[in-house]
Amino acid sequence: MLRSRHIFTTAAIGFVVAISASLIACSDAASEETPFSPETSEVNPVEADSVKIQPVKTDSATTDSAKIDSVETDSAEVDQSMFETACTAENEGMIDSIENHYGKFGYDRYPDYFRCEKGSWVKRESWIRCDKGAQEGDACIYSYTDGSLMTFNEIYAYTNNGGWERYSGDHDLGKFTIQTENGRDTAFFKFAGWGGWREVKDYQYNCFSKFDAKDTCVLETNEGKNYYLTQIDADPSHFPVWIRIDYDPELGFCSFYEEQKYGEKDGKRYYCSQGLKPYLSWPELKWTETELIPQQDNDSRRNGLTDEEYDILDLPKEASTGDLVGGLLEVCFYNQKKGAFAGPDSRYTTFILNFCIPQNYYRYENGSWTLDVHYHQNEKGVWILQTDKEIAEAKENNRCTQEKEGTEIFTLPRVEVTSYRALAEPGTIYQCVSEGEIFKEFTYGRYEVVEVFK
Image 1 (cartoon, one colour):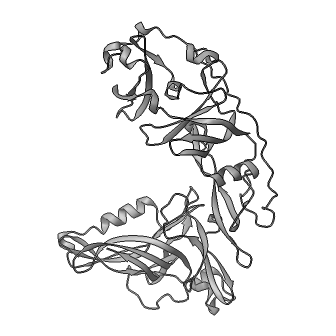
Image 2 (image 1 turned 60 degrees about the vertical axis):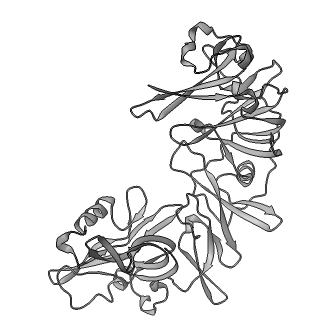
């Protein structure tokens, strides 16, 4: 077991928040229905009930939570030699913490807290990090990061018995007026189960307090109405989050549940997709004008044909064994990022692209075309072209070696579309060189380059 140390002074421990606060009781608003129904989603905001902070007592085998600040711990149980700084009259009240590292690699960290009291280090709970000079009803919010690099928050209330008591998960939403070094501010928190309290934005707080998870949250601002939908995380330990969506009276809603939706307005075509930073955890989607749309939406030959019949219309009549070509049905992606070594100086280049790629790929074998790779949902509900295993096998087979120097390597597009984001990489052609591989061009689809970074 590894141990590390952190020392605090009483003047710089956490921060205290003022007595005014509202806590919203947990509701059973979560719904298994699809969290989006434009026709019935908007509801009238209901003002949340405000209640005075009522600290919830915590149970402990060794601590009376009603008098948590006056509990004495036998200092003889604490090994005083493990502290770098001796507890003396000069540092009375100083706080020290020792992190205990558990697990094979020591990633799990559970700090123990100690306070210098009357010549000895005394083990205390984490409430000792809160400012001692508080009044009844004040709250203390303390943030810390554990070995998983996740940030956790603990909230304590100062009670009339002169001690701090920690809130439990009996309340799941809180709005606090806090006192910081820069003046007064407002902080919003939501209880996240095992993850403790998580700080959220003001619109998250307002949506959670006024709308059910299945609703569209509609908030009025000086700039007009803003619309939000909940994104339900697959991890049960996480709470849903509200994500801003776009709305146009003619085009309708644009949300992550409608990725790659298209619309027409004033003779122009628009797509619903994420912005220029597709790798953000919670991308903001919006309506954007475009001329690049799936060709099946603009091809008169599609009329009267099934998808399968239309898809194979342009397959070559003559081909060689092993040839691979894409069908006519397309799926389009916008503002996608692709990095590669390119150019005569083999400089690493990042391309921001819009592109449409075939949904299905056919291989020529035994004198006919056979479906080889197709756009489909895997067992997790993610839309892909190839499995991770197939991608890894193709990468190994296409690895540039000395024997392959000078030859061209073709790679298929990569696709990963979930309920809240669409990520894709275009098909590419690389030239094998002695230093590795150099990008030549994109293939298997139609592409337009938005930006290039070198």
